[in-house]
Length: 214
Image (cartoon, rainbow, N blue to C red):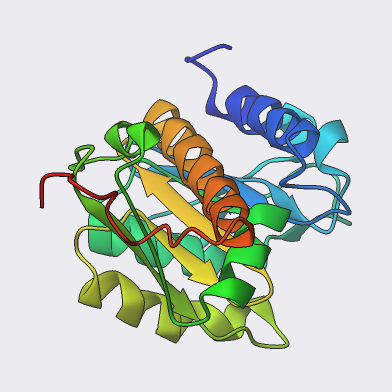
């Protein structure tokens, strides 16, 4: 995966996440910051078919600097939410996915997702095996842009997390660069899926195993 052209990176990551099942049906979004410019995938398009020339370039205030040559393309509705993570966490990349595992997690744990004592936790920033991962869940809205305030509040109130779940919708994940955001998204999705499977087996993912260090 090229690390020099952010437009090509956005297109390649869109394809990758499409085949993960996180950006199907034109859903999801990806944004990467490079210097004082942010590169965002367009809205409402087949994510596996995005080309580098389809990517929007915006400034640090979210104003469009370079629109795509195709005037029919629209800036992603996720833009205000991406900007919240860029501003509040100094993120280098922000991802939004419609993973079924994320949506299911919000149905099983509608206020806050918790899981502990799972090896994959170590892949998340600042967490160890014995820690409890907590991810806030915010209510969904009819329009993506209306989530911006509640997402910003959740980011402020939960400094440890690099993800926010949206009820019956999906998840926003960020990282210091695109590589970190990608691995964080993969680890969180693994944990969402595993937690749902644990619950189906009668195991509470938020409870440490018997005899484990507290």
